[in-house]
Length: 113
Image (cartoon, rainbow, N blue to C red; front, top):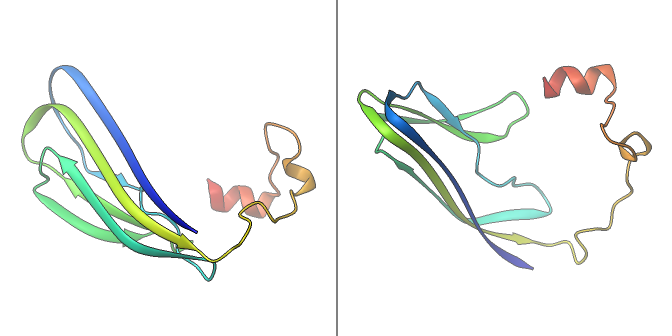
């Protein structure tokens, strides 16, 4: 099954602001059951610098930084992914996730923090 995903984030400010470095985490996961066919990230205003990075769990992200002020920030990711799973819901829900808020085991909570 092929999915086309568009994710937009926009912040509008009441005056000029200086944007500190941002880490944009909008790239879909890729593993043995899902493949990224295309991915494009557009950031406005245009960053002065951009660097690909990944977290300790291997999730890809992009760090962007700026040198001027702006009245808005926008990030848009366009991705096409293909899953090889015939049913994306063929999993067992962990018993600990049957109630909200989820109570994670200490080791998982440390990674998620």
